[in-house]
Amino acid sequence: MRFNFSRGSWGLALALSLLVSACGGGSGDSKKLEQIVDADRQGIVSIALADNDGYVHLRGSKQLVLQGTDKNNQIVDLSSKASWRLSDTRLGKIDSKGLFTPSGESGQLTVTASYADLSTSQPLIIFDADLVSITLISETSSVDVCKNASFSAEALFDNGLVLDYPLEWRLANSQSEELASFPNKNQGLLKTHKSGVVSILAEGKNNAGETVSSSPLEFSIAPTLTQISLSAPEAENLSLREGQTTQLQATAKWVNGTSGDIITNASLSLSDNKIARIDSEGVFTALTGSYAGSEVTVTAACDSISAELVMTLLKPNIRAIEIRTNGGNTESVSLSRGNSTKLLVTASFEDNTGTDASYNHNLRWEIVESESDSFDADKLRLDDQGQLTADGDLPMEERINLVIEAWVVDDEGEVLRNSAGAEIRDRIKAIINL
Amino acid sequence: MKKISTLLIACLASLGAQAESPLNYDLNGQYVYTQVKSAGETFSPRLFQVKAGVSLKESLLAGIGIQGQYATPIDDSTKGNLTLDIKSQSGVFITLADPNSDPESLKFMLLLGYGSTKLETLDQFDGKTSDTFSGFAYGFSFQQRIFPKTPLSFSLDCTRHYRDSHLRIDGCGVGASYAF
Image 1: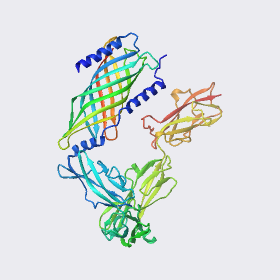
Image 2: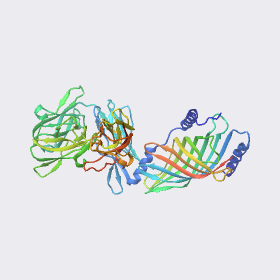
Image 3: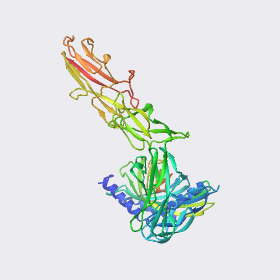
Image 4: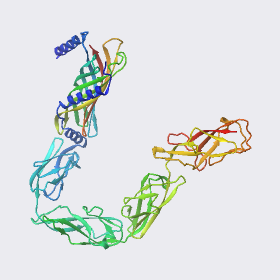
């Protein structure tokens, strides 16, 4: 008996190949090769670590930056391409982009950054001095409302050094919280929403775990906004189909003539939260649409100025339809003279996004006379809702065979095509019995 | 080298000539076009490759075999100021073919195993560096007899010799095989 490509044969071949592969040992330094190719492409001739104080608190972290110099003396950031190494891995770890994080022990080590065949080193001191005070720094004393403002802080330690330190940012009181916010408490980026004066501060923990706060900084948010306009540049005709999303833009103008997108600063709301959704980044999602189009109004407001945008929500595009009877027969429908029956349609949406078992929007119904037996059109009728009626006095000597067809059309009556280019239509046989 | 090759071929031929032998032997020579991709660049050095294979023909595991490959450089490839050369490339593969396929029809074979490629780079700033990249390798091969009932076949192979997030080494070759 031959072992003709059975599972066992494949399994044995795979096991043997893995065994062969495992016997071979490790691979080479492919990252270094990548650096050599990259260095040649960028024309890097030398590297150096960017100037830094060489200190990191054991509660903090330090981003080291490897700079390359190319043939034209241009500086290139190579931090994410370099290979980073520590002389003592007990004191901390360094990631592939040069971010050093202490393990919680003080000491000194050497950081080495390598790129292609070049390398450079620097000492790094991990210290555990105690936090004494925090001083806030702001480049300006005010900002236009609905813009962001950046702050930094200097942390002073009991050894006299002023160094980077992990701090948390917050607003000092509830009145300030109505005007602005820090979306990420670990970053000194203030988002403003209303004009007024806010009080901000930064806090850090000392070695005893006690909170050390900066003095509050009074900062002015200027009432300089003059206009907001809301748009959805990527949404054709401002309409979306169910499940689709689009990025909204809120363009603001200020008294000094500047303008900018304030969608993340503006307060966003919808006229109907059941059929659509909008997040804080201005991403609008259509949840429930209709074939004719359902409208929802988006409002963006900032410092008492607002703008509105009406979006239209549609059902998904139709891929195909299927005619069926009340009993679910999709092949044929039987009807006796003197009776009436309603034909139903199931629509299947593009991209397998679902079906609609009660589809009846913009359907054109027709009895295909060229493929049907002759009949009296006054006594045997098919209306535009798919209702097939055979009057009791319909003249007939034997059963009448019909072919009924339905098309999906647009508002002008043109037959629609699906994404594959095929007309969206279906047929069913109808038998009229005596 | 010539003596060793001659001896190897003669040895394999004598083994294959034994009527009761449950094994198939073949020897192959190929011109290989490689693609070495790294840091968005593609280098295409070319190689000459010799392959020797043996497979079972009359057993429960008919169709399974083992193949050894060795390639030497024909030329290197240069992009910008960097020249990349494959100094050598070797591999050991388990081969899997349909034992019931018609000998006169196109033969398909899968290769799974271990590949090793020694690369050398030469750059005006970094100078010459070389490293060997080894690991799991896989590929496929097509063979078609040149003339009916003769032992000579055309061959077309494609093999992935190495892949990780920084480097990819692929090769496709055309050549001829002799079945003993």
